Length: 280
Image (cartoon, rainbow, N blue to C red; front, side):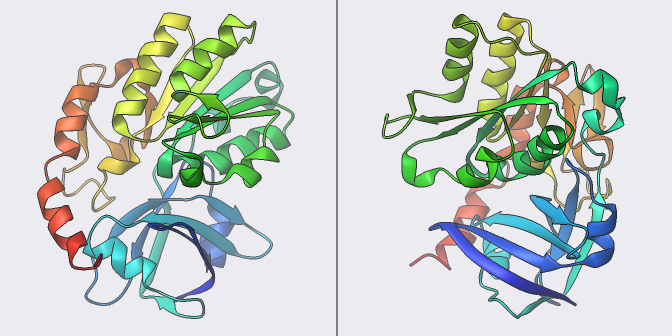
C-alpha cells in the first residue's frame, strides 16, 4: 500500500499527487515511469515520474482524467492509499548516461505540451542542477491550462510560455516559439519534446528544419508497461520497438508518428464512454 501525502488539482481534469514510495524514490531517474494500481479491481496505469525526492522518500505523479482507471486514481484523497505502485520502469533519459563534462557543453531546449509538461520538470531540473544550459517552452491552448510554470521556472535558464489564444506569453504554438527563438540568435544542441503525439510530430519536423537533434517520449502509448500486451508497439528507424521496454524516449527523427497516432486513437471511443460516467 502506498499513501498519498499530497493532492492538488492543477486544472479541472489534471491532478498532481505526491506518494510515499521510498524504495522507488531511491532508484528513480528522469524519463522513467511507474505502474499505478488504484485498488484491487483497478487497471494497471503507466504514469511518467514527474518528480522524486530521495530524502523524503516520495515520488510525484500527474494524472489526466481520460477514462475509468484515471478517474479512480484522481478520486483518491490525501491520506488514502494506492493498492500498488511499481517502478521505476523504462529507460532513463539519454543524457543521464552522458559524461558530465561533455554535458556541460550542451544547450538543451525542452518543448512541453499539456500533461507532458510535468515529466519535463525532473529532466530539466536534473540538467540544470549539473550546470547544463536549459531553456523550456510550455504550450497550452490558454493560460488557465498551463501547468508546472513555477516549478520549471526554477529549473531552467529561460522559461517561455506559449498560448494558442495569446492570453499569456508567445501567441502561438511551441514550435513557432522555437523558430522565433532561433531566428533571434538562440542556439541549441539538443531538443526534447513531451506532449500530445501531434505536437511531438511537428516539433520533430521543426527541429529537423533547424538541424537540432530531438528526443521524444512515447509514454502515452503504454498500457501494461512490461512489453507483454504489445499496445505500445511502434516503428522506430524501420524496426518494431515497444515504448515501455525500449523507451519511452526515442530519437524523434526515427519515429513513425503517423503509425503511432493511429495506434493511440484505437480506443478513443471506449475511453470517452467510460469518462462520461465520471464527468456529469
